[in-house]
Amino acid sequence: MTSSTIPGRTRRLHRAWLVAAVAFVAILGAAGFRATPGVLINPLREEFGWTTGTISLAVSVNLVLYGLTAPFAAALMDRFGMRRVVACALLLVAAGSGLTVWMTASWQLLLLWGVLVGLGTGSMALVFVATVTDRWFVRHRGLVTGVLTAAGATGQLVFLPVLAWLATGPGWRVASLTVAGAALAVVPFVWWLLRDHPEDVGLTALGAGPGATRRAPATGNAAARALGVLRSAARTRPFWYLAGGFAICGASTNGLVGTHFIPAAHDHGMSEPTAAGLLAIIGIFDVAGTVASGWLSDRMDPKVLLGVYYGLRGLSLMVLPGLFAATAEPSMLIFIVFYGLDWVATVPPTVALCRRIYGPDGAVVFGWVFGSHQVGAAVAAVGAGLTRDHLGAYDLAWYAAGLLCLAAAAMSLAIRHAGTR
Image 1 (cartoon, rainbow, N blue to C red):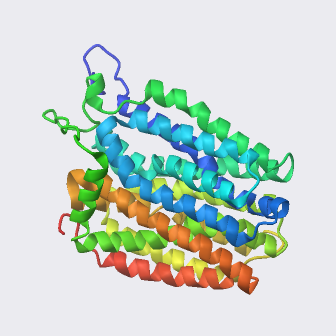
Image 2 (cartoon, rainbow, N blue to C red):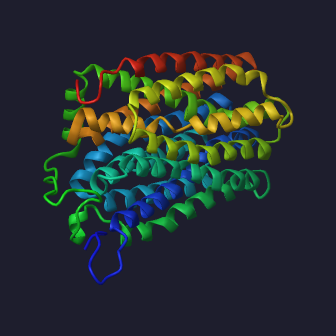
């Protein structure tokens, strides 16, 4: 039974909203570890004597795998179902985070932070969002994409201040175990409540017409399908504009601000809990900005939205170096609010363009585009760390990211209208 009105009965909420709620909680649970590296750079540097560049290398491996796992995860979800893939992903996140408490060498950081958690978080990430909305929603698809994307920001909001307090109080090991426990706690909800398709419970997608039918499940090798979709998409110009823009998106968010904002603020005398609190504020406004972006993606040309988002982000990053101080001045708070509204607002229009241009392969194509996002993030994470090690400041990294964002705005506006290749 769907949410349509039945004479003599109360209107029922469509099961799609429950699936979206479970997906939100799952992404929320995994987001804790996404927030952890920036909080732990200084504690690890102080305890083990590792350089910022060494720690940033582990973060970069994590970011690369987080992205490059995505298209294969999308294909695996088509082959084996979302429930199995997401449950296994959360277990990997919990194992990678929990085992860090016993590490003694930098290669172990690389293995745990980099490989295990990179594979786990990459197996759900934003391709999970694209898959859920593709299967369960026709109406409100852009809005739900925005809400689920915002789950990552909400996870940052929930975990960052707590992790910063734990890292500077009880210690970074307690912070890592907290993240592992949060990821484990979500697994039962995913297994019991998440369903792969509306037809599994006798429904159709929310807003689907009466004649809508389920697309035949994928068969064969998931990796071969993911690579085949890449070969096909790579022959089209919009793919390279989307991938190039999203690579710059990753460089300017996860790779730079997400990883290095706290140590950069610390360089100017700001305490780590205060800097973490500023990132949490970014998370608050990111939720509003991303949900609004999803709503707008249902109503406006997505490429225009991307052009505006990237352009404004680039200008804001170019003024950031002059805003750092020992305390959170009003000018920094204005930047935090503005940047928060723009942080992940790029995701809903990017998902919408992939879906409109590439049809049934849209989720897998978005997986590859998201892979470029994480490659860009990884390059920025290492590059900013090396900049800090060799120049003693992050200023050059902020200016370079700002210029790249302006280039991303130009690429986005050059995408031909959705529906053409």
